[in-house]
Length: 274
Picture 1 (cartoon, rainbow, N blue to C red):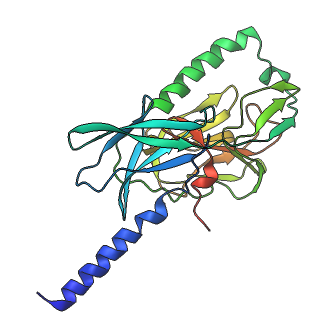
Picture 2 (cartoon, helix red, strand yellow; picture 1 turned 90 degrees about the vertical axis):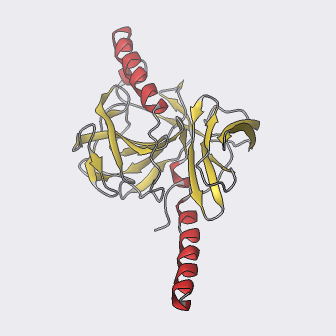
Picture 3 (tube, rainbow, N blue to C red; picture 1 turned 45 degrees about the vertical axis):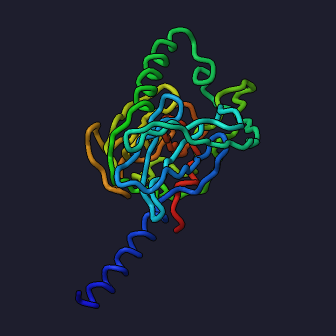
């Protein structure tokens, strides 16, 4: 066999083994984080479920890896990941450590967005049903770009997981991160994907949901303008809209959420180093 060919083959194998590892998010096995669970090195892609939600399974230089999104409400301790591989089924342990998230207190001028009157509840319930459908969606896409890019250039003003007190009332934890940008700032897709939904939501304002495959979805909220339509394919870095001040806000900004198997997880774990 040609020695040059052998040498190139080994170099190529080394390159392919190293490349995907950089695409995996950083692991943080805490509520609101991501667990990376090794599933062996078989020839066929295993399937895995955390609770009732199917999770992403990717390959790196060491074999198959389950990327498990851990809900913010998840209790610390040992949980089971159900795995099907090679015609057999079993479980893998997912050990979750405790994490403390600080409290954020702020005011929203529009009181209706904090204490919705009864006439708004039907709209909120209808929107929540659609959001739950998006969270449960799983598109079996084998090649995923996980080196997410920041969707806007701006100072971070709201960290993930903050326990929020709005107008003196306890509300849901912060399920994303905020970029302090003025109205009209370009908002770009964090990675390639398909637009699964757009719309004007009661709390989120004008929003875009992007499906990146295997249960990974990103959400862009409070937009002033949406430039894409459901079903469209977008490239990483493509402009999908302009930032704004719509929905429940205390001022102009972009809110960005990353969903993994339906769980909102810390987006900073996915951001590639610039």
